[in-house]
Length: 479
Ligand code: NAP
Image 1: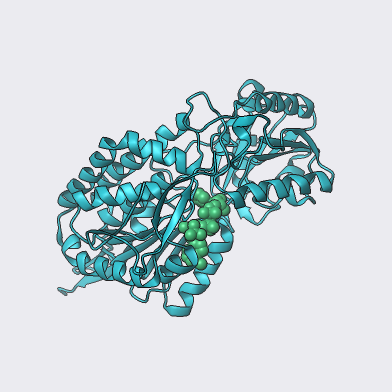
Image 2 (image 1 turned 90 degrees about the vertical axis):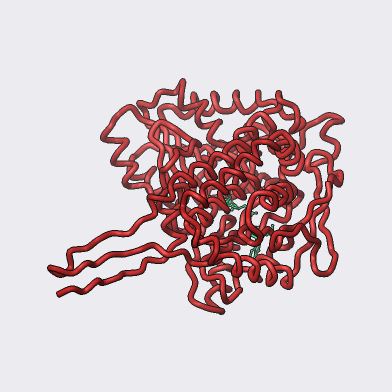
């Protein structure tokens, strides 16, 4: 699989001809390559996006939506191929990844349908005159995405900017860029040249060049808090920019004494997203269980995690695959050792699975730690791996304080049958997305995003679409 970049409607190599290998994380074999883009390539991509933008913005919303539907149809037509490449390139298990591929096309159609909702207001500021606002596109939007759901994020990355009249430059994740190559081929067929540009390469090279580009005012980033802060700094060194950040999490799930454990225990395991080895920003990696239920919940969770089938990502029976890349594996291994060193009790997993199938590749068994306390690093830092910490609590104020005692604030899950407890706790947790008696699922149209170091800005909703526009106030003076 030899992919190319999409710049100005052409599938191209990088300016210096360099390429980056794609590694199958299950076997460590090279399965393809993509161009190692350069700052020069990024310059060309932004120039192409800039020159395509006025004509794109001049189209009616219906016309833009029709183009977007063509892209979504193109993705559906190649869904099986995208799925296979994505599974091989990420290590995420195939049974769950089908939804990712479908979601990428669905998000494009969904946003295409929302074009008429991106609208201004009229304000009765003075009698007799007309005071209105209009939403104007920024021009070129830069989007930088992480490795855990590359095609789902890439589909989303183009949908919002395009329907609002912007053109876009996408920088896919270095570790899993192959599916972006297919998306480039589809966009070449379906869209006017320059409307979508995809530049692969290293974050510090092409990502940084995009962030620092003086004519890209709007940057939407999904990735780690560390890189998010680097991007904010880099952007501010060049110009005043609108930067939104979807970052990491260390998400609490709080189990109250009246919780329905038949549902809460499976939900706690599902919330860890082991199908992609916990490599999800929303994973419920801290399970706070009331003292009265602690042993039962721990046992139930441990039993389910122990029973998870680890196997090849392309096997529909596999429930857990390898980690995405070597660095992620090393990070998980480091934190598991740290947990043991800090005095937490490792009750399940945490080692390399046995057997010939796992001799090569970035494999690790999902790990559950009991007796975790909030002074431990495994309780506070994002591991972005298959490591769950189970923490005991006895007072409501205590558990809310512990839940909020991290720099992150992305998601939270609250399990109780008492409506007062549910609402009060939902209001007190410092998280941007809260489930009461649920985990994991994102709901269409509901704004997703984080508080504290989990980010700024909201996506997956009308808030996201509006964020790709600038408000202009117009006063029609008749009196
Ligand atoms: P990352 O290391 O921050 O990388 C994310 C993207 O930023 C990649 O495309 C990366 O390129 C690029 N990048 C790196 N350095 C850059 C720089 N100096 N300037 C511009 N771009 C740069 O994150 P990751 O390891 O891929 O993903 C895991 C993180 O993403 C976790 O923290 C996770 O929680 C978070 N995440 C958040 C959400 C959300 O919606 N809140 C969703 C998914 C993931 P390279 O790949 O070339 O390094």
